[in-house]
Image (tube, rainbow, N blue to C red; front, side, top):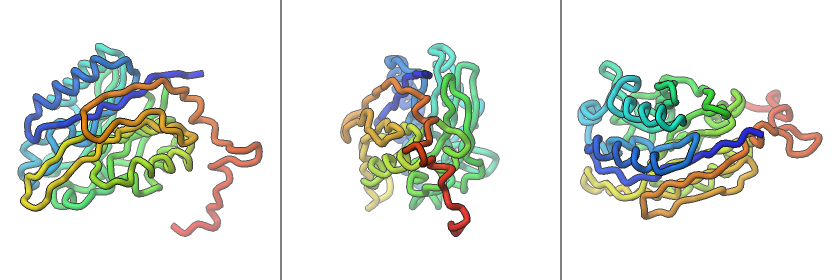
Length: 266
């Protein structure tokens, strides 16, 4: 059996204070005993940008920026893998992205496919596919926040062989924690959702309260751990990755082989 320790880091970032936010996250990672850890969406910058210009000023290169370099350093030191949400700048484009780093450095970037609300005014549409990557003893794929509402995202990662969905988030709607139970059940995968807490009101009349409730869900829908909705906190649990590779729910029912693609409308 392939057992690893998976973790979420639930943070309370201060908008625009990248150095403080990153260093706070690194301290929480360093205090964990984990093989794979997930940080929230836009963990290094905060969430509520007033303009695309402001986002571009705080965005970084996903491969060689300060955020990527600092996360890669601790990943190498701790021999672990980390997924983290960040604002990514590519030429004139700005993406809401998640990077994956490991003991050997940068591995991949995923750019958010399904932009939520005012994100459509700030970020460019993601142009990366849903891909699966080796992370020690597990195969992992990334989604970001609002991707949870679209079952095709999790299903694509599962069909490509993901054992664990790494899910950086800045959740304000109340539905995601429970919906991710369904995503895990219907795909028989683990999921680590890392959310943030606190509020932002940088746009008058648009006060955002982030709901916390970061969690780790098992392929059978069990909540292995869930954070509260107020405090920054980090938790790790040991999981048996092989459980995500068992796609039968009865001796005669395989969740992938039983799909009736001849009856589905695309």
